[in-house]
Amino acid sequence: MAKTNMVEREKRRARLVKKYAAKRAQLKEIIRSPKSTPEQRVAAQVALATQPRDAGSNRLRNRCAITGRSRGVYRKFGLARAKIRELAMRGEIPGLGKGSW
Image 1 (cartoon, rainbow, N blue to C red):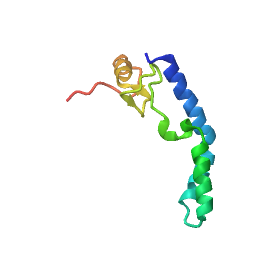
Image 2: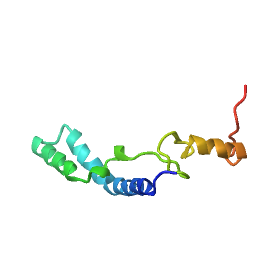
Image 3: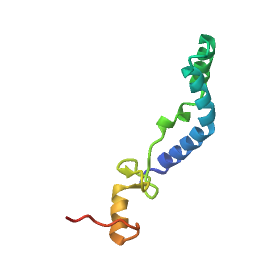
């Protein structure tokens, strides 16, 4: 099991990302746009830099839904590899079985 504070930190980051997503997209569009003036661009860059650090989506980390493990997490299932194996062996993930050839 991952530390509880690490899991809670990820949840807090996810809320921040969701909260600031629209504003960040708008500011980034102003920065990228060839039609915006240099003053607008600088103002948008400053506004983007003053937002909380955890508001960026690249700060999120995939974690296992059961254990909170951060490594070896499969996006399709949202579970760590060890938990996928356990659940697959018990037959609790529909359509997933042990490979054999």
